[in-house]
Length: 241
Length: 319
Image (cartoon, rainbow over all chains, first blue to last red; front, side, top):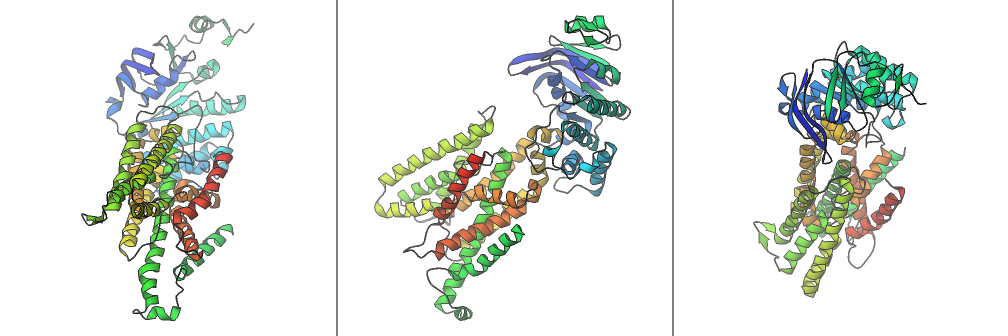
């Protein structure tokens, strides 16, 4: 359960979200035009951007969580993985998901390593475990990020445009994994892909003009979409002609 | 294979190192503790070997930490002006004629230490004003500080008499010559604890190796850890520079060499860098003693002669 109270966010001195109050009880897909503040909202919920107002996650102000408590509560998966260490292998990367569970100054336990292995197995990337992150394809990287988030065992997972860089086949793989995760986690999925969002079958949060519109159903119709995005839709696809 | 040759070579050099120098020693005399040979061996050569090893170890590992935290291979305490700060501090002490002890510490060392510490806090304060592309700006800050300190040091030179200037010149070139065991033991302790602390934070460093954002998301307080590691490293360097003067390029070259030998993540390179740095500087120091010159070559010159071209290579290679 994520609750926002009078949330206002500035990014580069521009107001992105203004006085937003809403609660996200369960799975949600966040849609909206470019620059409407989808990623800003997601990062704000993870307490990575300064904001005014209040963010309550499971009844507790996000500011009062310690870093590790927060990591056990929320995992955030970026669209693109930036990393500095060119030698980091997939196995090492996934294991970092256990950092918040690990005791300070102690090595990752056997149990931690086992969870990392299991997640790589379940996502079918175990054969890549000795490969460096820099050698992975976009599809493999997306799975690596997911494996790390699952290893983190947080209750909420936020996906920031998970299918943006992927080919149709990999998009499908990722989409199916995310849908399956709805049974075990609260998922928040930012996307531009209408068909993907419909497949996930979540409530929809549409960001527009610094505000959020909440749709329980009736989002996936051509008339609604045309009105929201300001372009004509037919069968949930943009009419290019 | 490569690795074994490197380590084998280093260990051989380390073993022969105490026997190399202006005075050649006879092994037979070393058992007779009253002989001159034994005195040179036990009071000058051995302490120096120990000192050089731990100095190199400290330089290597702090270089690695700086490079990792700032994500830039050119970031070391030396390039950021911390060593220059120490040099200026020491220069001022020499100019003021403070050759006596203050609180049991040589005034030159104390001033050098203060110069380094002052620079650290100046850098931390100034870096708060930096926004994006922070690392490049910070590097530029360090370079600007270094240039400023160098000019200030020139003023000190200009005002000094020839004896003071000779002392100062020696200091700026860096020297590993020590007499007795006091400094080697001090540095061994400093170097040991710096390594232990950095090693204790190896998982945090590993996490920071992905990105700051990612580390924060995993629950790491990256600001706190960065500050702790920078302070620990800088203080270690401050102590070293206050005794020996600036020894450049070791912190730059050593981590890179270790990375070439062991292409793995930082977690697995910390102790290796520490060891490698020690042996590397000991090797350089042995060179200064092996080259027959009127007076000994300052260590800073050898490391700069090796490090300068390497620095250019790094810039051209763009990493």
